[in-house]
Length: 333
Image 1: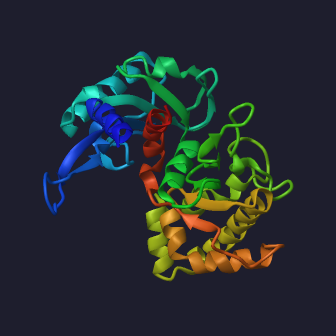
Image 2 (image 1 turned 45 degrees about the vertical axis):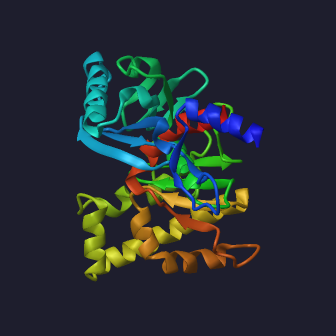
C-alpha cells in the first residue's frame, strides 16, 4: 500500500490522475475513487493535403476533443508555412484548452517521407521533392514529428481495434498507399517506403499509373477510376450506382475484381489482419458482402474472412494518427 500511495502521489503531482468521487464505507473514512486524467496532456495532428489542412486535438485516450478543416491550397513557400502556424494558433484558441497542455504536433503529409532525416522526399500530390519538414514546421511553436499520411492513418486505426497488434492498412483515395504495423509500431522500411501497395504490379504492361509505371494497383483502384470522367467525387458515383446506373454497376464490379486481387496479395504476403481506409472505405463497407465474394475464390489457404476490417475514423484517421505520435511517445516514456 505505501508503494501504491507513493506512485499515486507522483502521478497526481504531474496531473495525470485525479479524485473523481468516493465509495461507500462500512466504517471510517470513505475511500476515494482515483481515475486517470486523460486530458492532462493533449496532442495536435495536422494533415496537409493538396487543397486543405485538417486539424485534430486529442487527449491521452485518443478522444477527439476538437477538429477543423480549412481550405488552404498547398504552396512550397514561406507564406504557406507561416499560415500553418496561424491556423494552429486559431485552432487551439477555438478549442478552449490551455496551449501549455499540448505536448507536441504531428504532421501528416502525402508522399515518401525519410523519417530519419525528416524530409518529404517525393509527393506527386503536392508536386514537391526533397522538402525538409523542419521548414514546413518552422512556425509551429511545439515539438513536431512527421510521417506519411497512410502510415499515420493505419497507426490510428490499429489503436482503435482491440486485440490486434499487427496489421496492414490499405488506404484508397485518389492515390493508393498503406502502412505496416508490427507490435503496435509503424514499420517504415529501410528507405521509409514501406506500405506503398498502390505501386505493386497487378497487370503486366497494364494501365499507366501516376508514378509513370504500368499495371500498378493504383491505376486500377484509385477513386479516380470510379469518378472519371463523369463525376466530381465518389459521393456522386455511388449516388448513381445506388440509383441503378448500369455503367456504374459494371464499373464497380470490375473495380472490386482488381481491389480484391490487391487485398488478397497483401493478405497472402503478410498473413495478417487488413484494415481498408481512405474515402472508399465507408462505401466499401456497405458492399462488404460483394467484397467477400470476390475474395473467397482467390484465397489459397482457407475461407476465413474476418481478417478484413474497415476504417473506424474515415477521413480523420491520418490527422489522428499524426497526433498519436506524441501520445505514443509520452505513454512509452
